[in-house]
Length: 203
Length: 313
Image (tube, rainbow over all chains, first blue to last red; front, top):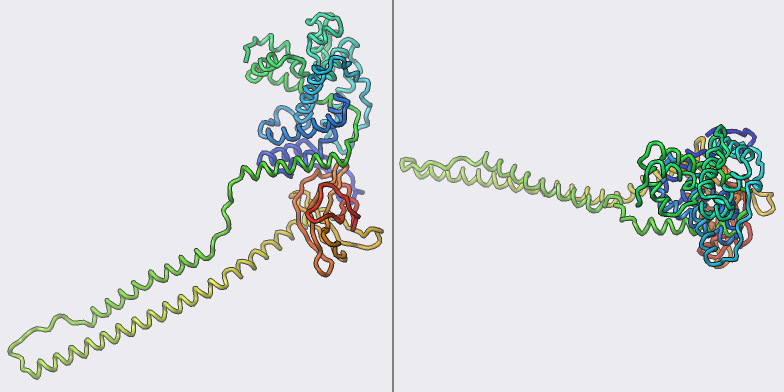
């Protein structure tokens, strides 16, 4: 925690994952005020994600509430070694949003795919109050997304935004399931580490 | 859970991270990854990468009122769940029981004093007088008188000791009774002192922020709010407040970008003053402003009434 702006009425400090971890520990000790604080910190990012997936504000709000309630009930299952608290929350939220998306599709065959693409992602300026590690990682993934070949990007988009299974993506793209699997894997590995090479499915 | 080979699991890691597989395959891969030193960390990294994608989506504004409602519901549900699971916490020691124990100690002292009396009695009581036919009657009578006098003296001494012991016991009982009366007073003073010290500690230190409160036209001071960001304690000190209307109270709101969080309700005293304390954790940078509104008795989940005082961070 480092003061970054001396002109503020009192020191404004960078919120880091250590602060989130402290909140989750308090949640394990059944301190409900920590749940409120975690909501203040991450509800906006979570809502943005699930709204992007569901395209429905009411459903997105339900998923946000369910996600934080799940986090409260399962706070003891969070393991800091597996990633930041925000990753944990966004993973739970995305999974629930995709479950909702799939249930919606089961009931309404006429629904078209979520047309969202990674091109919709804005090129954001770094936030000086954000955790530097998260900020750097975000920029790395954003940069790697730009460098993905179209066929890898397409597979990733169908999986990420629509929750399609590999066979569903194969049907949607007309590609063999094995090719889809390889493209998906290489694309994600490139986002994790841009030094990974290969044109997925073509090697 | 279906068993899966290392190679099969490794080939599915990306699909599992993206949640693009059936639940059967997902469970099998996760079970393998939990024990595999290669697949476990890789799956964690791929999931983290997928989650990072979530940070890149365009920011969307959640309805502030509804967000405040979600937050309130979550905290209330969590509180209700915690309270339903909690067991009664032992209270502070019962002073009455403590005094009863002291009284018991005093009672136990009494037999000891009686034993002293018994000992005294033994010391002054001589052995049985020898019977002697050769001794003249006068001498016998003098001896009997002497014994009688000694016995009387011993009895008087015993009686005196008994009276003195009883007096001491009464004094002790009176003193215990006095302690019994003063106990709650002392306890109350100690508690007040402890509260005062705790409040002073909350209001000082590097983690404390102070937000001034102004009246509606922002021309006059109405108090201040002290926020201890280390302990999440809030102390609202307000003055010159008119009495709320019939059936109404004042409610304190902590306003963040996405929510208005209630920090409690209050009614000022007859001089228009109040000092309330609340515990409410919010992000260190999340607070935007603080407001006091007039609301129906019992408070509301989001502000509806006029703003009486407000302060901006």
